[in-house]
Image (cartoon, rainbow, N blue to C red):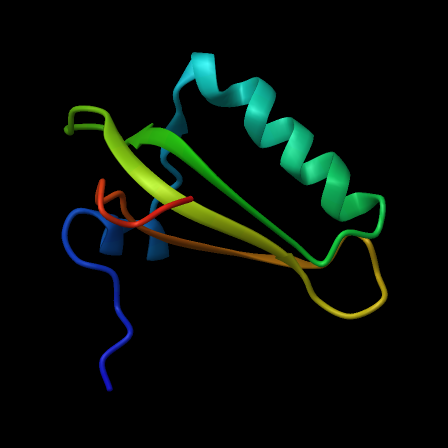
Length: 84
């Protein structure tokens, strides 16, 4: 099964997108929750790459192992029929 993100999100493999400034508070809160011991946090944020418009994505931050600095972020294009 192909688990690669659809364009343009596949660029996340080699590029670091910019997070929308209005979404920083919710993203940082999710990161703090993970650092404090939460296993998973789901959220919706907007990102963009150098030559794209803002892309609304569903993101899931999850903790990997016992070290608070180790984690994973999974993203998918936000569809309004998929709750976050």
